[in-house]
Length: 254
Length: 254
Image (cartoon, rainbow over all chains, first blue to last red; front, side):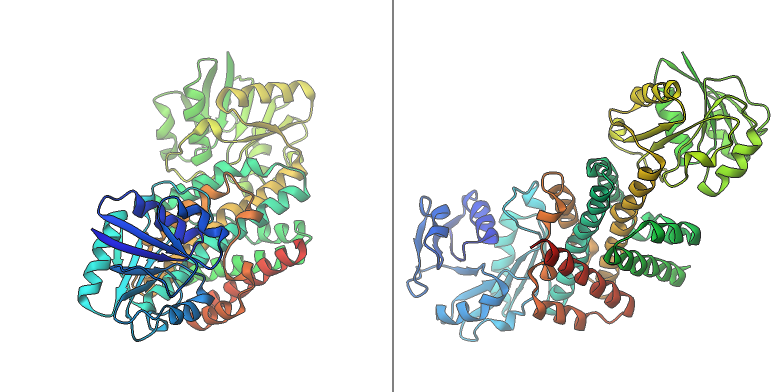
């Protein structure tokens, strides 16, 4: 039986709590959080505390707090020689205090409280200072995911940056599209089958091959017409920057 | 029985051919195309011709050719008083010759030869010069789609422009993400569950509410770190432009 203490009460902590709770070999012995109210989600199923110094004995302490809180909280915990991991995409393993056995346990997904389908497919990027801890983390991740990867801090940061393009910027494209629809009183719903197909295509094709549209075809007439249709300067600037980036990408590759 | 002549042999023509062929009330009497080889796809199931002047008698003539060919091909057809529609998102109905009864029959989807799931959900944007033809087009579209909409040329152009953001630019975000992964030797596959979730979220949330990430949080430290991680000027410019656009979008709305 693996004993886990979770520090944090946000969406990542809730996700880990839920998937660990379903596994017979994992015992979630305690959840630690500053806010009493946020502990409500957990308190019927496990011990909870607001005191960072009253940690129960466990095989692993998982820090699932905001990036900007990792440094301060991890120092407060005083986990001498214990395995302490954070769950962030963009923070180095070395940001954790030296007196702990340090590691990273990063689920590459966006957690916003909405239930996620196919939770077992969420990739885990795992890292540890020593080999024994790495094996332990890998085994733990494999209990809840079929996609476990050894990724260094440096590569994890690049992956997190790529995720900003694939997730945050993609969602902003949906937003700008919905904005154009709203301005011209056409329902954004009409674009949803297209958005679905855009996603489905890259499950089978590379994004390089899947690219279509006026910038890809170097169709200067349509590019010009689209700029005339756009009235908003923000939309114009995004349109120009992305069209140029597409033209440059395919200019290089041809 | 509705008799249809299809002019064009590309992906849109193939899609329409396939869905019309499945419907018992629609008779696809002829496919017309310049290239002999491209007619192979159709010739076992219907009459084909390369001659734009040898059109069979039909209730509707559907022009499914490239945008830049619509003007020239439609003039060559000489369809006096016949119902002639094009299938383009960005061309006005008025671009068709005046001697025909003009209309638009635009399927809002990306067609690249890859089979499309849930074909019956593809939205059709329909327009016609006269009311009788409009009703005919609407009925025809409803035979093959459960999402049929009356959309003017002006609104259709805006919808097509919104589709560039939702489809072409979104795919370019996937491409830039895959580029970063390739540069740093991490598999792009790791981002696919995240890409799926990004798409799934806006099926239930508005893109405005679904937005996350450093630009949304106005997390200047991470924005700065990401710019340092990016070496390529094209990637840097896209990152800056989109982060500013997100900051501006939420600055306005807050």
